[in-house]
Amino acid sequence: MEQTMNRRAYNNSKNSATAIYSTPYLAAVVTFMLSLLLLPMLTRAQRLPVNRVGSSLPDSISWFPFAAFPAPVRLAVIAGDPTIKGPYVVRVKVPAGVKLLPHIHPEDRIYTILSGVFYIGLGTSFDDAKLMAFPPGAVFILPGNTPHFHWAKSGEYVSQVTATGPLGISYVNPADDPRNH
Figure 1 (cartoon, one colour):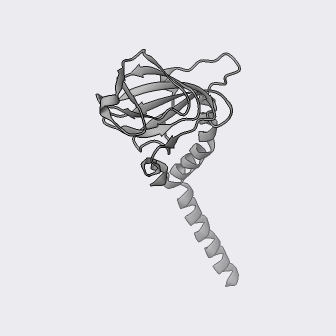
Figure 2 (figure 1 turned 90 degrees about the vertical axis):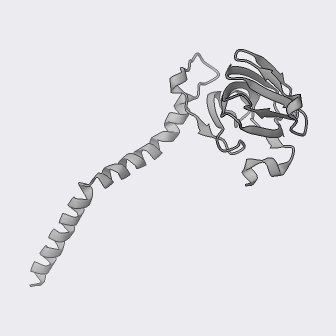
């Protein structure tokens, strides 16, 4: 009798396990887990090293939220590693209407405008009368520790920033820093 109960318990657990393993749920879980394992490798693979020949095509760029920017703004690391000392290139995509309130970067920066109109103003308080507009193809040099602000006033823009890391950003008014919310 005990042997029969054990056999039934084994068969039931075997059937339950088979049902779980054959469901679309398991396939989704496995796919999700694999994507978590592969994501860091894919992200690193898209960053170009700065010490050898390489290239990047627009459709291979991955955009990510960046905690120091307002939620809809996206950042893409193109080359180098902005978290360490050394050269880097990032792109910043700012949707229409978004403002980046006065902040500073410790590093000298070279902005190249790729699309849209890039509005930037200098100073410690946001003042739209101080905004300067730069069209695609324009280059803007910003020395480190210069207080400035941005506004995607006339629509989305994409800028490319070339600098020597590590990348830093601090807001003139800490209450304006999205990391504090």
